Image (cartoon, rainbow, N blue to C red; front, side, top):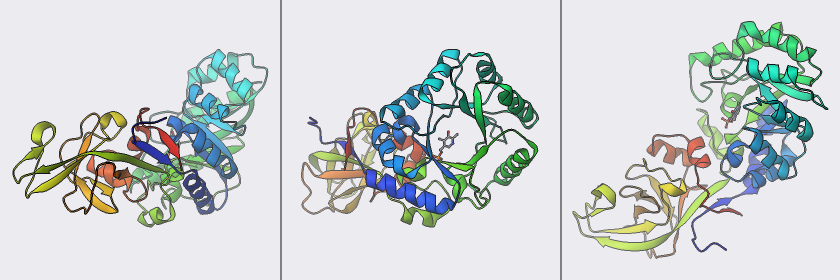
Amino acid sequence: MHYRQTRAEISTAAIAHNAQWVRKTMNGGKLLGVVKADGYGHGVAPAAQALTPHVDGMAAGFMEEALAVRETGYTGPLVILEGCFSASELSVCAEHNLSPVVHCEQQLQAIEQTALNKPLWVWLKVDTGMHRLGWSEEQTQQAMVRLNASRNVLGVTLMSHLANADADHKLNAEQKRLFCQLSESTDGYQARSFHNSAGLLNPETQWVLQENDWVRAGLLLYGVNPSAVTEVQASLKPAMRLVAPIIALHKLERGESVGYGSAWTAQRPSLIATVAMGYADGYPRQAENGTPAMVRGQIVGLAGRVSMDMLTIDVTDVADVQIGDDVELWGPNIDVRQIAACAGTISWHLLTGVSVRVPRVKV
Ligand SMILES: *Cc1c(COP(=O)(O)O)cnc(C)c1O
């Protein structure tokens, strides 16, 4: 039972639609559905269940997340993007058929030195310019030889990650060139993976996907376009609608202010609605005055600072507005990318930041 009307409505049909769109766009290769961070905030169970018929594998951030994916009943390939560091973790990988990323010496040694009763498929991560995780160009072949020599290794996917796929940046072509060169010069792998959502769409990083090229798609599956290719958004369906009710209405005279810091002042006689959504729910406190929301089908603007449990919007121009009315903070009508822009952040941050006190409601 939820007494508070505040909620994140999750459309599994939208997730399925987006996955099908991604697959069509890939036009070849294999699709790894990224469900880390509780399915990008949508809930790992609805996300995994919606994706299962449409993906060839899934990816979690770390062991606990991978086990949460297994608990949804998913039995297919499942990658642990940060990999594993200990012998005990590797044993859990063997038990649950999980594929760890191997990005450093410590992880490689753990694989070489642990006695496993089943070999693992591993993803060898090479650093092509992001400099966050992965083996250097010089280290890659040697790491591959060692993996292939280990009894614990069933097969290897060669992978790398893009630093600037969502933008026009000189590193895009450079990373692609280095990854293609490494995949030519390295032996001992059966598959490879280079593209995230934006990388799939960026002309600078695309290639014609072969059967064993895996695309690691996250944001696109949840209906948000991460790329600079703007027309893409029209093909996607946002899977999360963040909604909260109006819990108070206040008339302000011209010159009166609302909220902490009195950061918004009425320029005309105004009607202010207080909405049960605050930064403790995951709405960004940095959102500026005028950040859009929707009530009764009309776009309205944030008025004043976001507080912990509430925010305030200017509903002066909304006819018949009432306490109890739902306000869409982001979703099919209010683009989460626009909220991110108004708050100086990114869509990934907002979706994954919706807090535990907001119930996820399947619609
Ligand atoms: C999170 C993640 C992805 C998915 O990124 P999107 O931009 O959401 O598509 C892909 N690869 C790696 C290594 C990741 O960590």
